[in-house]
Length: 443
Image 1 (cartoon, one colour):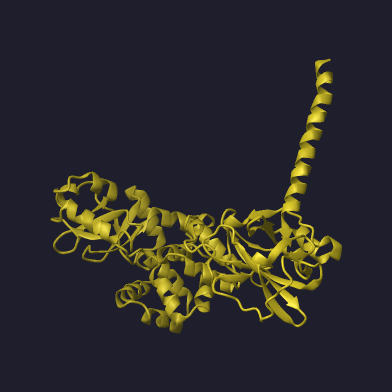
Image 2: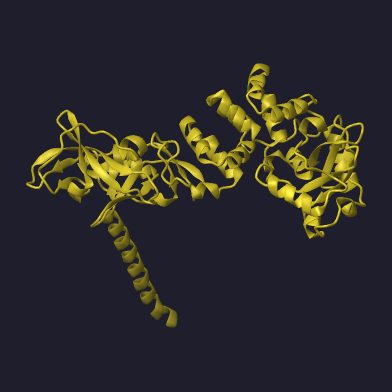
């Protein structure tokens, strides 16, 4: 009986919730103006006479999360006239009303920092930094208020594309079912991308290298270049290391040789060697010739090793210290290297002849007393070493038998040449978990 009494109340509650949702949706639709639906619509002066048709909307790219509209481009006969936003009395779904009958009939010219929303953004690629994906703008939504008109959202739904292709009377009606907040958007891939929406690109800086790599692979040629240019050099290098080799080769072919050489030079040596091997001999030499001499020499040394040997896929970025160096001096050196080599996790201690003595992790280094000598930190277990000619099977066996997380590649005199980490082996054995760092799988 109690359940029977509650059912009508629940039904009424559900009807009320549905009514509230429909009311909210209608309110949203009424507040937003569809750019695609407004294009080509009449523009009226204060007296109600039609003066032209809307050709485009101009917005200012800058530090605002929601770019403000600065004016309209109105087609008057065969000319395009600019109407400042201050002269707009009302921006409706089907028409624009102006506050004055006076218009500046000079030809429209884009000013610094301005973008044409229809020409530069609509139907172009954009980057959604929340969803971490490349999207295409099916429509842009404007929000008029008492003091400003703001670009607030981008529509990516199929329904909106169908609306634009359907009967003319339906085109001005917004259909905000898949709208992305413009605050999460970066305009890479648009012809307006050269004018950055937010000069700091904070949202992009928070993305992981693999996520940036996905965006680089999905963007068109222009968008790739804009995105790369917006990243710090180290972040750009990290993203390139995560790209599919074929996509990365294509990107390097798209940019000038100097730019391609600079990008590869900032990658980890083993990653740089991997991609250089994908290029033909003349292309490889062209890039190496354009790199700083020290980096080019290091990469040529690595390329000299067969690619299926430890020397061919080792990481040659090493920090070598002497046994009589103090802990304080080594810490200071690491601080100086923090920028250029952000992935350091250990230092290699060598004797007076440059021979390997031990591998000291950063944790052990930073809990030691500053005045201690590095020789005081060395001791069992001995570092696991391997020669540069060793194959992948020997590398795996060395890690397993030595129960080590890293192998040090040494020459005949036990001088360190590079390191191979355990996670590189995991990438080789399970390529679906990451980019393949080794030339082939175990057979």
